[in-house]
Length: 409
Ligand SMILES: *[C@@H]1O[C@H](CO)[C@@H](O)[C@H](O)[C@H]1NC(C)=O
Ligand SMILES: *[C@@H]1O[C@H](CO)[C@@H](O)[C@H](O)[C@H]1NC(C)=O
Image 1 (spheres, rainbow, N blue to C red):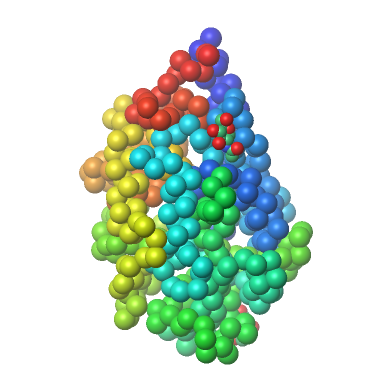
Image 2: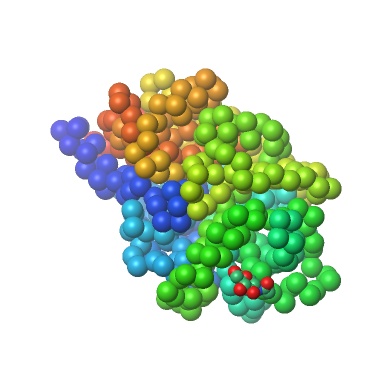
């Protein structure tokens, strides 16, 4: 009886999360905790080329409002798991423990850090970057829709080519004064911004030369230039994190995630590193430690890193494969293409960092900045029972122990 309930709950609420992400390389998705995924959905579908993978309105049966979108790179033929494009997921698991602050309050803190998007803030380094050949189309759309956006320019040191960029914070909060913790940075080599002297100029590149070239070439070979809503198609470049300690984050990335460096740079503005988890990945991981970590928001980058990490420490009972929390929904997914998970598991354990297994082949591991990774590979002897459940796992008051009995209620 309870096994059946567990199984049906797995199928109802968890199965879709197990689709190995692909498309856009094997770093195929970025997932975020959010209080109001349907606000994210509305905004994304209006302003970006997307397609729906999973859309579930808020439900007290599954304890989640859930939106999983593909980002159309002009090659997309369908938005499903393995054959889908790069995906961005929003998870509104409202019963999960978000620590001393509510999800809405955390979103409000991010929103204060982003501010009016008229001056640089270290929180801009928390973003997903996409390359586009239609940057000015996006800028005029943001202008006419009144979407605040931070415009900037930079030079790729390898090619000496000029690039432009805009960052936008994406809606998704039940707090009417806040948006979500997601930001998107659009990059392009052709924009009116390039000629404007009033635009912020970075002394470090916003992306690696390799990442820019790879994304540009992906778009150049795309059969379509526009998504179904007329927006220019986008190719993922990287997933970026602000860092209060770049050396710490690079050590974890190379040591535990077995990543390799693509680019490293330093200038007056700070230090930046990009790398790939596996060679051949279309989407890089980026860490940026600005020389000034002063934010307009109430929470410093170091405090936010510690907040997430402390919550995972409280809520993960890794030895018993129990526990979860709301911010553990913040993770990216990487399909290792059937590779053995053992080296990653050994390294995560040696680093003393939190982790949890799902379904035998999904290894969730959390780094020193508090963000997670879902590695998909093979593992002999990894816990394989149980599914992903937003009503019973990581919930406030019981985050360290799954509440199996609630399934029967
Ligand atoms: C979903 O429902 C729960 C329970 O009623 C509520 O606490 C939460 O705020 C709702 N979320 C959204 C996005 O409406
Ligand atoms: C932008 O890059 C494309 C190739 O990706 C190239 O054809 C084009 O000339 C570049 N435009 C500028 C303004 O450099």
